[in-house]
Length: 343
Ligand code: 5GP
Ligand code: MN
Image (cartoon, rainbow, N blue to C red; front, top):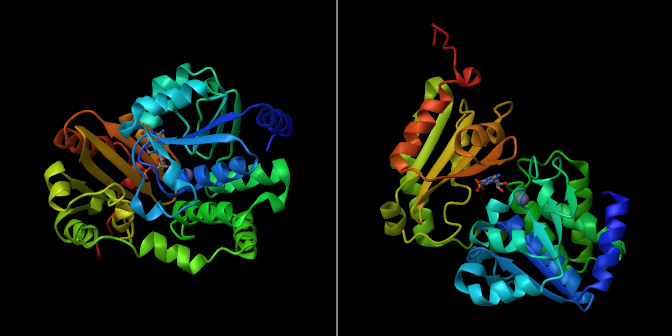
């Protein structure tokens, strides 16, 4: 991390009182994990700290220390706006572009506070922030928060509550150490979190063994009825209409990880999930190896993210979005499979 920027942010933190942490819409384990780790660190410094998320986070993260204090913007706009106005420093975690905070975008953009971005996505919008701690080749924003705290105050500054939150971020953003997991540092940090006293088995159970019956049935339905495999283009996708989500009593987070099942088919290099929500279509892209879904999401759907995991929002209908997608992939020669005549 840049030492000059770190020193300036350290000084700012010591001078200011009202600190705010914001993270992206549909907060996942890394978004909330990194936010709660930083929250617990700053609270210990006797600061007045708030966390605002654009919408609700999944229930399986509610046990994180401080999660009960999070202000949900779309449920409590008046309070949230006041907090944003009064904030002296705003920490923006786990997103690279302001549109990722959805309806909060304008309020954060126009806020007078110093803005600090801590993030691991490609191509961050540098112009919107006073300080940027961006690293792409890292497991998660939570790992960046670990480094941030350690750089500011040393390893002993990380307590059990922060360690729990950091571990959740690393665990979820690496799919339980199955992708973005080739960095030695991630394991050194994880080992330190265990030394601090986290219970990795218990955390895994809290995150992955607390699903509702309807979520599991939705998964079964998607795999048996909704998975479309385009063998000749190494592509597989799943789409879900609002009615289907309602039928399975959809709760935030219920489709998390679903797209990875499509990618787990041996020859599939590109997997996509389309879900119809709140009049928009959310798209999740995942890929293997050289297929760059950050570039694909940017070019065709104004989205982005990482090389092998990205997302976007589409404002045309689900049907039209899928048609556009089917059309777009035809240009990607690296997806074409050359079938052996013997096969
Ligand atoms: P997910 O499919 O899990 O929603 O997102 C995959 C990755 O892409 C995440 O790292 C997420 O932060 C990023 N991402 C998702 N949607 C968007 C988007 O609309 N724009 C950008 N720039 N990144 C996104
Ligand atoms: Mn992340």
